[in-house]
Each structure stands twice: as structure tokens, then as C-alpha cells.
Image (cartoon, rainbow over all chains, first blue to last red; front, side):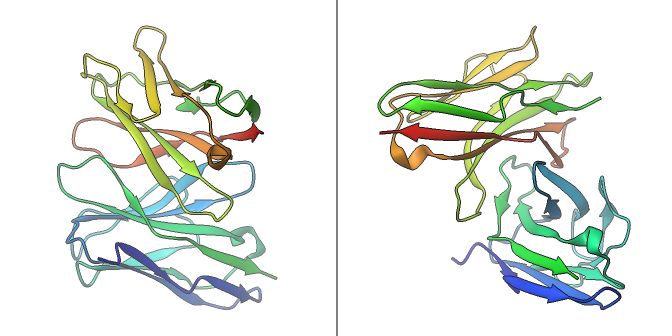
Length: 112
Length: 115
């Protein structure tokens, strides 16, 4: 089992560019999440999904879009990157009725 | 108001000693869960321990125990017999409400274990 994987691990963007972060899990989990972690702060929830084809906004959703076309994948998109989106992005998943979230290794994104 | 507060930005502990990392939480929901995660310098988030609001006993996992004081709304992490590998950031987090899985995180405590 690979658990939760994230692609890419690192990325540098210029302001205004777009990109998609991919999260994949092989644990058949229903719930998936995208968080961002900024220096001196804990993780904050961007968007989440409670199942294939569903998404919902978290605490800091502005500037991001997500899609969950397949149960095992959760995509995070930045349509027009801004320097304020420089952060480390974590994906997580959990099963229905479970409490523990399993985290991916993170993606370090820098927007110049 | 912050849902999770960690007031210790940094802590030092001597190897083999015990250390307590503080966490207080704020919720009006009777059903909630409290977590501690470890984040080493490599960056991954490692689950350590979980305490449900209805659990009668404090959670324990090996050298980790959670000192759950419901009336004080505190969920402190106790690490016994500290090891050099325990040096890391530690985050307290809460899920709020039955069936909810979204986590709210504190700002973390950086623990340094001194040989």
C-alpha cells in the first residue's frame, strides 16, 4: 500500500500561472482533504470531499478549485497563482466512520 | 476565537525525561475528537494519539499519553522517556461534531530533545 501520495513534491510558479496538484489514495477512503501549511501556523483546510463527485469548501477556499472525479483521486487547482499561495500543501484521507486522517508527504509550492 | 490553542512555541527536554505539551480547545459541540500529530523536519504528518469526547479514560499509545481534562477543555500530550528522535513540531487538532472529519489545527510546539 502506497497510502496517500502527492504529485508533484516541489513546484515553482510565476504569478498568474495555473497548475494542478494531484492527490491519490489506495485505501478506498471516502473522505479526502486539502490543507495548506504556512510558517508559524498549523494546517488549514482548503476544500474537502465526502465522496466521488462531491466537494465542499473549507476554511480558506478562495483562489482554489477542486475536483473528485474518481474516488481515489482528489485534484487541487490554482487558476491564477498569487504569491500569497506560497505554502506547503497536504492532502489527507479517511474512511467513513473513521477518525484518523492519513496524510500525504506534502507539496512545497512557491509562487514568485 | 481559536478552536485550538497551543501556547508553547518551543520546548526543551532532557533525553529520557518526560515532557508535557499543552493544548486547549474551544467548542460547544458535545461530540468532538482531539488529536496529536508529529511533524519531523522531513515534513510528513505522523498521527500519534486520539481522544474522543465521550471516552472515559485517557488515551495512551506507547510512550504517548493524552491528559484529557474535559472541564478545563485541555488535551495535553505527555511524552515519557524522551528520545532524540522525538525532536519535531507537534500539532494538536480537533474534529468537531458527530460524523465530522474536518480537522482544526493549533499553531504547533517545537520540541527539542537535548542529549
